[in-house]
Image 1: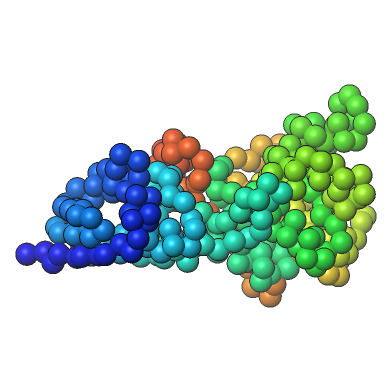
Image 2: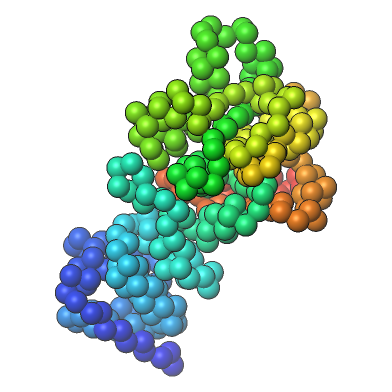
Length: 318
């Protein structure tokens, strides 16, 4: 016989947010834990059935999030359920604030993997964030860069990315340097705009406190007091990766992001492959691997990532 877990929710205002409009959040919880029976009377919640302890902890975590001012949505709820099932603490993850945006919003990690990524960036000189699309690799890297710039920990942000499609020959594209690199750095621009606003981003670019350049233009430079982000690093060659990593100067921090499953570099020789075996023992270098559980885009993106991973399994075994 399963134990019954009882929980009292303090305050009517929390109760409404906990259950959702027309009990939509409660419906999600019940669908996620079909072996449990959830009974709500006033501010008291009673859970019985095979997953009673897990559901009880879920409700406790949700109440903690609400008390900390974290609004609940179906997406937040689904990620919270995933973390509770993995015996992680959603309230610890989702209440960690990286920075406040220009519009007054809050940038926070949305999964335990993202929290490990943020902590690795804080702790290391060079951090590699490796994972599929939608895991927040570039978004959080830009947020950490802006935070470091605002705290005067660095003097500038440098955004770079290999221009694989143009073979690093940007002269074939029309326009000045900014126009030429724009298509390749657009994801980083978008994140920067979200953090500091379009006007703020433009001011940083004009002052030189934010610099954008294709990876080829990093050669021969030493970047001091800078927060450097190399995006789409799976499309670097091993030689380009070595060149980039040796550009890091005093007082600088670097974040390298990439998706090892989307290599477009000619010949397939990615500078990201086998790198952990080469650099993994160096103090100040950190590697964080993000997976399907860290995807925070539309739910279908996570399903697509999972489907491709399963499709690749037989090939990996041969």
